[in-house]
Amino acid sequence: MEGKEREITLRFLAEPSDVNFGGKVHGGAVMKWIDLASYACGTQWSGKYCITAYAGGIRFVEPIYVGNIVEITAKVLYTGRTSMHIGVEVKAGDPKETDRYLKTHCLTIMVAVDGNGKSTPVPEWIPETERDISLRDAALKLVEMRKKISDEMTSFIE
Image (cartoon, rainbow, N blue to C red; front, side, top):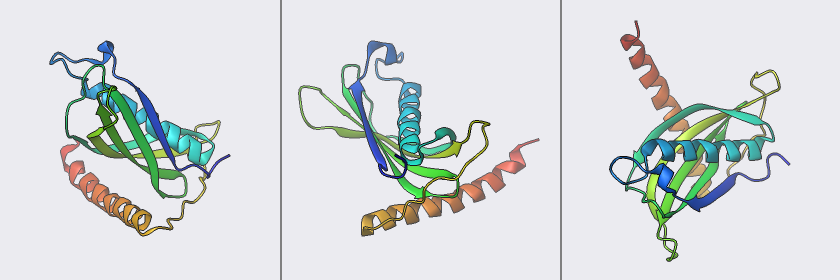
């Protein structure tokens, strides 16, 4: 049922096929995982098929190694009319231990679409705790920052 679960955590082992030439998990693999978690979160919240409209602010904090257990937590931070701003944290660690350490974090925006690929409304998420209000406000600030960046980037487009 849509609008009930605003957070999801995916867990799996980093595999040898995820490795880059430096022997660590490839950043592109991490970005794919982020997209998968964002899709699952947005679809779970909206009850509709979702597409990625934006992924930004990706910060690679530490490398992930093959064999690490990876946890990707995606959480709705703000909802627009058809979009969901989703905060994503990627943590990883030795599967023989219980500790997981922050490796990457970012913000994605997923848009719910209908069977014709047109954007469609999503349930509103209303923050209740101080922390959730703070997260929503941060997401709204990022909206304004993205608009300014987009305006600046138009000067580079021919």
